[in-house]
Each structure stands twice: as C-alpha cells, then as structure tokens.
Amino acid sequence: MLAKSTLKKLIKQRIKDSEVLMNNRCYNSSIYMGGYAIELALKYKICKMYRFYLGFPETSQEFNFYFKNPQFTKEQNKNLRPVITQLREIKIHDLEKLLYYSGEELTVKEKCLSEWELTFFWTPEIRYKIMTTKKEDAIINLHSIKIIINNII
Image (tube, rainbow, N blue to C red):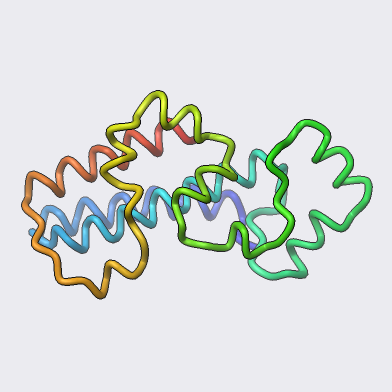
C-alpha cells in the first residue's frame, strides 16, 4: 500500500527533481520526471475520491480489501462514479485514464486545458525517445505541471 502521505511527499519530490534537472539543462529528463509528479497527484486524488484511507493499492489483495468488503463497497459506491472494477484500471501510467478515475477530468479540462494538452502525452516510455527539448519548452512544461497539480490536489 502506498500511503497518501507518501504520495504527497513524492509529488513534491518529483517536482523538485524536475526543477533541478531543468536548472542543469537536462530538459528531456525534467519533463520525464514532471510526468511522474502528475501521475502521483492523480493517484493521490483517486485515494481521496474512492476513500482509499490506507493509501493507493499496489496489489490485488490490497485492492480487494477496498472493493470486496460489502459494507465499504456499498458506502463507497453510493455517490461515486465511475466505479473501478480491477486494480489494473488504476495501476497504470496513462494520465488520461487516471484523470478520468480521479474525478477531476472536468475541473482540469475547464481550468487548465492548455496546460493539460502540453503534458498528457507523457508516458514512462518517453525515456526511450531521443528528444530535443528547448529550455523554454521545459520551463513551460514544468509551469503547466504545477498548475495541473494545484488544480488536482
């Protein structure tokens, strides 16, 4: 189980990592690390929305603890949609899907759509791509990441 307090610390740490990388002219790596900050923020929000009070489930057993308990499931699902049915739906790196499950899709796309459009392409696989990123683009990307995270949490 990834505790919510750990998620919050990791979000701050990944943003700081992204800033350090950018300040050291590692622009591609800065964008890469910033994407993880968004992913962690979305997973943190999923914990809050679905009342994962112990934290983000990392195994099927942890997931089932939340969703197989009849009393918890009834209370939890009373007002919350969409319903997550399997751990693999949220134990992913797909920012669009995580945004959907976080319940913040409307907020993010209304308040910071232009920032989202600059960042949602992120996947861990970009580490394998040779990219040429300008300093200005990295600065804009990091600024966008911070705006998105502020709107999520």
